[in-house]
Length: 372
Image (cartoon, rainbow, N blue to C red; front, side):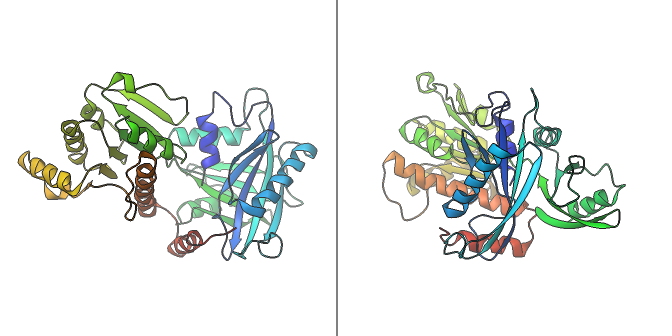
């Protein structure tokens, strides 16, 4: 939901995607009806040099990119506009739903982004949940009331009280009607939550590198660990780290809680040590081991001898990869393993999400169809 803020955080120093000197347009889906390509809160960022992120592709995204480019050429910073897109009649997309999109022109002034972007990024860095509230276009829209960052420390004004009520709800984002000075004003509000996903790939061989290359395209922080120094060339991608470790099992014990781990080293003995370190932690979201059912059976016999419980060993997935893909080429294995890791990530997000059940069901039904 806050992927564009994650990108600002990730490129804080480099500014590769969003140059400090340029205006950009934050394009956000703020309301949906029926079947739509992406859910409420999805954003992409457009500059004159290109676009980062996606609101679902197809004709909808093409039209939004054109509108954003036009705004960059004609508007000043800190301006907002909304557009309504009936996907069937306006975009020729067979999903046929309706999408409301918010366009926000913003940009850096000298060495800093607008204060609300800086505050949202700081909340992510500090793993603090806050509410980002953006006043939607109307006759009363001004630079002063355009954006608020809300935390639970303040509940004085009618806006802050409404945001406090939203924060205690199960929603992740919504359009709220808030009364201020006797007048109703619409605000788009969303939670800013650090949902960083940590993935560790043990083994930098042909398959390990293919898995890293596949998973590097999702919104996650990856580390690839190998005990062979000549396999540990540094990676230039912002979300990929490579670590040389003579004892990978020691690093396994130090990974962040709720990490997703794939074990595929060159050594069966090393695989066992790493899996043992991961399974005994009981806070790892996914522990996948490359190999066969017979390899798993051997490992389970060994773990029983060293005192791991059945509850702990039940956390081992082996063989790895989604069913129905039998190819053994590194690229095909990587796709299969990445799909299984994504399933595990989805399960974690569903378990920890603030999203209301009916909204989750709507998202699942949307993902089940092609929308272009």
